Length: 557
Image 1 (cartoon, rainbow, N blue to C red):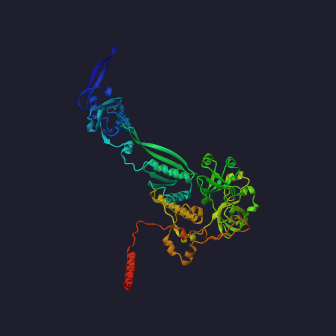
Image 2 (tube, rainbow, N blue to C red):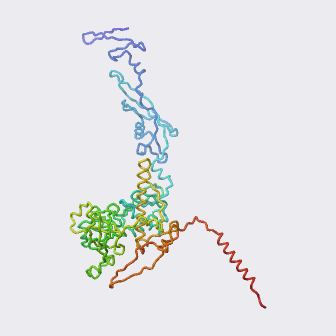
């Protein structure tokens, strides 16, 4: 039913039309609402809070009284900081306009937080609707990271992270044997193996300092200490720290090819830019393959020119050379200043070696070498062929050798007759991966590491100086498999020195540097129980023999 009312506007009277609501039958003006429903019915039939979550969870740490925002934030109850955390837990507020927000009082022991919200939204034809509702949040107890550190029983208090960013682990294999020989790892809690090195965990800071001091006496290292606060007691002024020592080794290893910058060569006394690392102690020992003069590079000098020094490892850039002739260099043909130089440690071993290589169509090439006591005619040597390496810095160097001999190649078949073994540290591999392709990559890394360890054993077998710092143990299984002839070869022989022409030259057998049975230690296994049956039987036999002798003795008066 439609009714008409008159509305006076100025001198004119304009009729005003009203209709009845289809729900409550109340008269209203449809021109204002532009609907067939009155305003009250629109409010009753529409809920603008649909899609807004009315419940939520707030993470609360009962020890430090902080709420998870994140991060963990200290908030008082019914504070604006806590209100912002609660509003962020609600979904759907972006569709409405927040008019007011306030807390509704609840008991703290109830673990409930209630927030009264007033929101506004346009419903129909510029009709804004405002509605009030209450959201309830539950406090869930959760320990924050700081409280976890404080209440967790920490098994370690100091860690030593040893790193060397190279493609092989030759230095770590040698370091592992030094730690085992001198028992430098007796206080360690656990050892973790990573891609670039090892992590040692200790109970106290003094134990970690002991390892760092020992490493500084055997290797050139750079140490960077750091500490992290775990917990503290403000009343007694006690602080609990975790200490970490980052030990960084230089990227130079034994048998690596090193190219020095020109400025560093002048500081070392005018040495050549192309050098070969033949030993690694507290300093880096280098030898010039052209002049055969030795020089020492400290870790401070290496750190200063680290970005300018180029290093090439033997495993990636090695070449094979066949030895045709070996001619020793007599000391009388050398300069007196060169002979009297205290730095030249390879004076008795200097030789001129004639070699051939496949890349040069087997054309003989004569080079100087410091391996006079190792190389023999017909053997195969391993080294660097600088004519085949793509090194840009060699273009700026006018004088450098074509080839550099590093060591003698060892037959892989001889590994089967190796009579010694080495102990290993029990290290946990923290880089274990899952998945098909990742497992294959992990298996490939493991095979590569095993091959590198076999090469390290080859170096130990032929290097007397290295064996002085390593404990070698008898491999009983391989010793039993050897024949009688091979076993006789492993017996220790007296080295016969033959001096000629009043020089310090000497000759030795090919097997002199091999490991002998007398040099090996017997592996002691504490779990093996001694067999008591045989000693008891032997003792009983001796007693019976003694009694029979006593029966034959006659006593004369």
